[in-house]
Length: 108
Length: 154
Image (tube, rainbow over all chains, first blue to last red):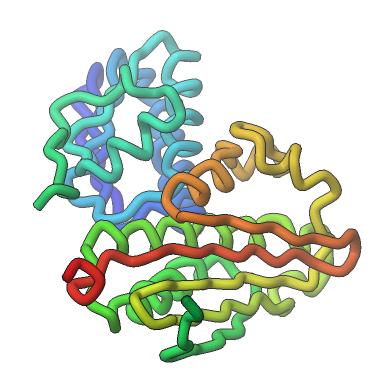
């Protein structure tokens, strides 16, 4: 599921549910449409409602990063849970993560 | 110490992307039997998702009946919370396994946006990842993990 908030210069794509290869296809198409039509300065991907993400999510972020850079914009990922932030860090994309969980649950 | 098989299950499903979430949910439910740490369940879900996605994307690519071809997942739980998962297809096989396991290597078409991190992710979330493949005959990925259970913490 995807909700898009667009104020013309800044787009927030709020994703809910799982991000896997199956879900990524539709997300990609919808987000790319709004990037192409609005040419935002900033695309924020809000992961607050994402419970699961595999490496397909990394592909999704990398692809959108390219798309938004092509129109002169930036991309940030916010509210990622720890496992999801870790998955993004795997790809060397740490710099796009803001305002996300860093707490380590493995010691609880 | 010889491990005793406690439970097993085999799931066969067509190589459709909708089965990525179905199969990882089955694996998570199977692993949950021994009441492991939540982070272990999350790790199993991610590793299974990567392996099944590889089969869906690659095994039967360019075949007409790709969506009807079968992926098989076998789950085995052993005493002490040792989990072995085997994900098998009868597809085209991997030409060069070492190359395929390198981070950011992918043969998927650009439209699929694969990050090439599948095997890297599997290896970092599981204790052991074994890949066997024969050209034209298929691929089998074995994932193993010692789960952290209440029992083996004693």
